[in-house]
Image (cartoon, rainbow, N blue to C red; front, top):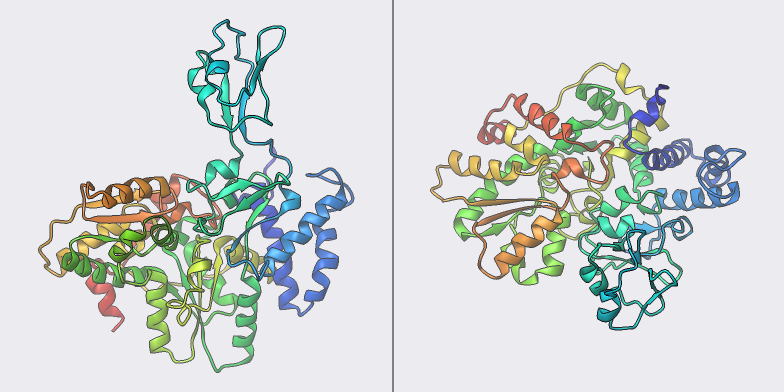
Length: 479
């Protein structure tokens, strides 16, 4: 069996690889001050002489041009960081109920009897058919079919979006309700045609790097999410740290140090208030604010770990600039908020970091290993579901706070919805909701290079390698 090229083996899917190629070329052009060439050369570079994914090279190149637009920041008038490439969203069949081959042409015709719009008819073989112009997708027919022959077909993006922020527009392309969307990026990762994409701030980061190289007036810091320990599987973590510095960053800091600070403060806040929901996941916080506004007062007042450590950097290093690097598309929304904007200057994902490495021809696997500032085990395991709850328990213990912690770790937005619903009705059997919008936590983020069960083991192993064994030790090292 032929082995895939190394570049492809860095990613889960070919869609991610295509996205990466565009980001890499855009970053390369930006570093070399030839952005004007991007729209001319990149589509031809990526789409050769014959189509490989679409009907013709002209459509493929037109879609690549849209990918370039998103790689360069996307639609500035759209506040959401998640956008749909309409021209690329045309291959999925229409959603709705349809009759499968399992229909036996029975005599009962229960489906016909329950249909409120008379949308069901039968052919000469008594097989059922649904008139889409009349069907309202109520699903009554599917419920009564004795053969389960009527199925509800949904597009992958609709299935991925658990908060129902995606619908089909008149053109048939997906459309996103910004008032509902929490920018978690689940649709981005699941779209098999890459028609839904997160905007990139990679040009802003390139600009920060170039200015830091030419101007010693500020130092450029990279704050990296602890989930990085499960990524870049072709190299050692210390080599990735060296690669980030090779890009032009002055220093690399663990967001896990911010997690230690948050765990310490959040455990104390929980004990004082008696009930709390976490503030670490920006998509979860957005979800609470949009769908459960009555619970907003219970959201922890702590900033997220990334914003907390960035605030510390800005306060201790005047003039510093901070870029957060992680798995999260929702972070691209968070850093633009008024309370976070003073501390984080830009955000990129692990996918975009890989594109930056290769845009500068940095062979990460050939570099010497560097080291990170040491967070505690508890700060590092924030990356996976349940980690925050464990850290809060440790924070209570280390501060000798007497409190009967009853955490509810929520892996994925569906689990979050259930917990929040119970809390809103005062029937939640717990006093602390750890909300993670992505299944498995940050290791399941849309901006990850790879996803899988092994990622959790990698994070736990990384946590156990921490020199600082307690949260107090990690925080004390910063003073």
